[in-house]
Length: 450
Image (cartoon, rainbow, N blue to C red; front, side):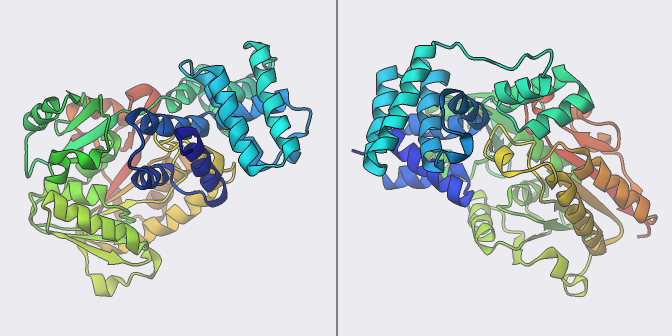
């Protein structure tokens, strides 16, 4: 029988093997099982994201419970144990017998008898412990303790404690483990914020205005896929975190200008800039993934924005002489993504201690390349959705030092007044634990001449 736990197990297995984005896998699974009851659809999402969010802590529990050495536990068995232990230890509305019985059923259908007994024994022992665990002493082993308790890689916790102190590291990790609100950007080309809030209320969806941006709202009570809401299909709204929206405000594109969006992805910022430009001018959106640009094109049509031209290309191979120059260029660079762990908890298990440095090398090359497309007097904006200095201030400083004909520009006058606390003058920085939004960074320069 198909149920939420079985489907969640299948998705988690897929992620383990293929590093696919959980949101897409969940949507695909729900589309294939459209008759699944609403509570099971919600449980499926809760289980997938919950297990990914708390994976490190769940693995610690497994290793505490098992006499088998960690490396000898089959990955499929470990995933099944994570799924069951998440229900037993982290959720309070699922009966213990239901979580254990479902896990044993899945094990029976996929594993030999001795592994079925192993799964059952581990889960029964977890119940017998009644919450009594031998945690590392926080005073003597703060990195180990916080890494386990907050379910973050040890290298991340150690780094944040060294750079910011234990309390800030603890707050940052705790914020990453919260469920981010659904944040929408109102498409002012088609509707006002007040109109959107009213229409959502008619569907029993509560919406609050963003404390930072006039065209952003946060919603609660959403019990359906966003794509099924009529005003979404009509192009009135777009899902986009406030931090991401702030990047377009920093670029500050003007109607009639020529804009280049590099590493455009699905085009959330391209569409936002098109709205800010009043759908007048030109936006060239470049990404090397054609399938992402196909979604960008469809989304632009839904939003009623016709000035975006998608281009499938690798930035490093993009010929400046064929593209011409632009008034403003945005490089939303590939990064470790640690500012978005509330929405993408799987990221923290796919990265390692060397990745911030590796990404910074690539980012520096891409930023130098992006500068070739800016006309004299034009603006270049560099942004990431991560929190590590070498990917952010480090890349920005390297560009400034190696490009004397570029002048750093302050971002303060581009940000709404409520966001000024997120800037040191020249750099934009948002944090989940300080501002309740994703962790983003941005820096800006103006090219001499023009």
